[in-house]
Image (cartoon, rainbow, N blue to C red; front, side, top):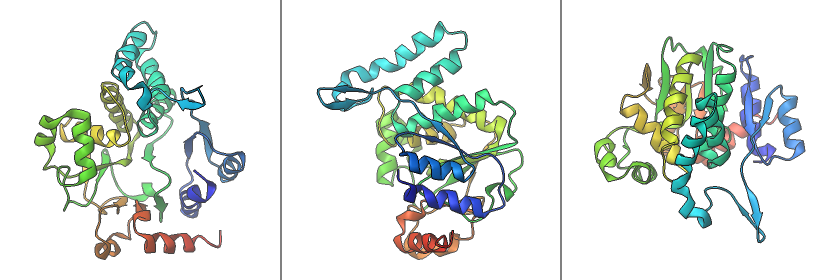
Length: 285
């Protein structure tokens, strides 16, 4: 991403009262963008990935040209991890190197929190490009809960085309039939005490490592699967806009205004007029 794409996240957050740690996992950013991020007091962690040049083409593990190898990766990760002194950390490290971008981030979250166990009271896992802060996200009372945020409930997993496709691709038609009428839980933002976020990530990582193939969106499918199956302890599904986050992506344009008081606006860029207004509000910074 360019600095202009990242800037609304950084500047809007720095306008709030939040004064805790901020860590961004990054790859392929130019030096001026990294400098702009770090000058805002944000820690940058370089995300290494497996890739290689072959006959002028950049290949990565889940490249379509390597499709026949994709089902082998989970077994390789399990085999290597078994001989490690720390199987969980090793599998997360390998998963981070192998996986596509959206899935890889969960392995990186897991590794970071494992290395810094007990370092934080609360943790927010978040997208970047489409997140805008209006207040400190931790000012909302969430107690001893892992807060996971529902999207617009007029759509379900089965009726929303992208979520339907992702769940079927990850788990097949049987699971789609089972969960198709459930509400959509957004994988882009999750908030809670560190120990609960770490527990969620342990389940998430274990489930992601079982996927026989990877593509964009399957992290959303796994997120919904583990939550609707009750596999994550103390997870609560928060109605859209009722907690710290309003997820605006599939909300009809005429209903967006009623959700704009949330501390965090997610997927605001799906509504061009709102996106332009929010960016204009940052013009002085």
